Length: 397
Image 1: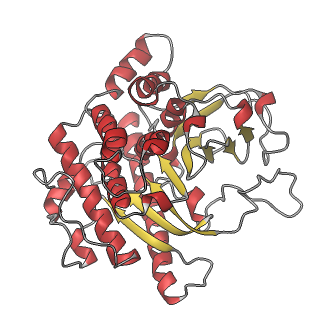
Image 2: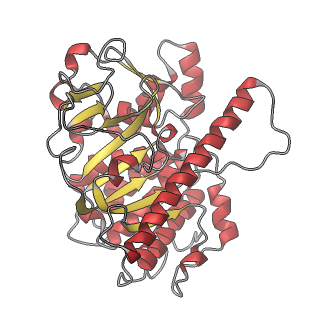
């Protein structure tokens, strides 16, 4: 990430254990997909993105899916359903809608954040525990990270408040490079817990507390913090706090990267509040906005560089699209009709885990589908056949 702290530095004489197939592996030509956060807004927008990738025949070729926050809900559910989706066809009616779209849309029709906050305040357990229980009851059904496929590699990212870096959850391990790694055999984490940690956006839903034990960690797998209290309990928050595009774990491993950004944007405020809760919330949003802008700029610069200097180590192929992008910027004569004023209205949906009505869901899915299509055909592969219509033609955007 430019000058950002790397997520796994290993010097030649480092005592840190090398993970086979991860740190010592050269950069791959295979593509990775990054899904940003943004509550239900992002979760549903990314359904449309994945729909278009599936129809275009690209989803089954992706080697890694890295996600944060609301994007992790979509990614983890996709991973759990991966083996039930037929990738030999582009017909979404065969299994894709039944196994992936319909259940996730049903979940988007329920609100869980306010109820979880109230119950977390009044009853034993934390807000994070309540969110995880809601995810588990509606989507993950008690499954652990072992329900994810071996390939592609799904990486669910949270931020470790104690160490200040990413904590990654995958089928093979959970790992904070400073604290250490817990391999699958000793990992006691459900999919719901991993997603709850990834989406525990502050200040209301954060932190998520994960119980771990010193003996669970692979010896000498942490850089400098493999000791109590770091190894006896993890205090986690939204993955977007550290990496709001879910970019870090994909960027260093893959030459082709697709980035889907459904994040919000901080508006100008003439009279900022001075009380500490609202002022702190405002400052958090400003930090998020700046980090998102810097990471987006890095992606764009690397995509441009790939056309001029494809052999450069900084060059990347792929595409970046966002919920706030004007589809006209891609200059395609056959892009689906998406008036910018209407798509910006969708981008203004609050970052909440609050019920979205069916019509809003269909518009968000249509918008994710359309902007992903435009970005793919404009910047990655012009030979991809243009779509005939939106997934939900009557709703448009």
